[in-house]
Length: 121
Image 1 (cartoon, rainbow, N blue to C red):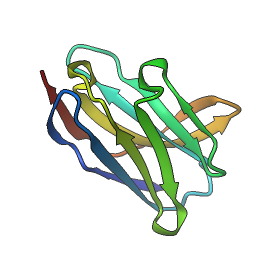
Image 2 (tube, rainbow, N blue to C red):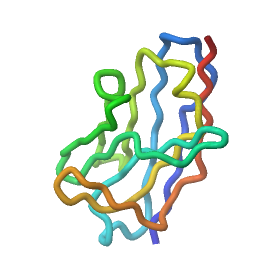
Image 3 (spheres, rainbow, N blue to C red):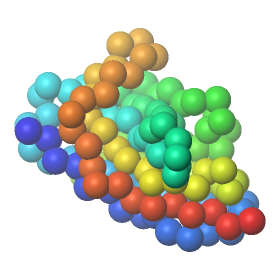
Image 4 (cartoon, helix red, strand yellow):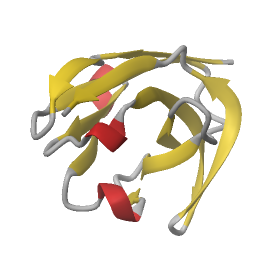
């Protein structure tokens, strides 16, 4: 079992920044990557960025150049630094413990509870 706890969401004006954190605990031997997803009201959950255990990163196009995913293995924590935020970034952000193969990320049943990000215009 893997437990994930997100934090760092909030309300920010357009152009602002937030840093989300995802702390992992439990048995992580079955996973080799963490993915950040988001889900806006009425929309499908979408993968924003992922990072493998060896630090390889991948981003959706809308996040490239604005978001940075990183990890601190000593703290079992993955971060999502979000800059130049836009109203369309408003969503609940979730982290997931899954597997990376090349640049492809496969999600697992292990999800955090989510953290709300609201960007005002």
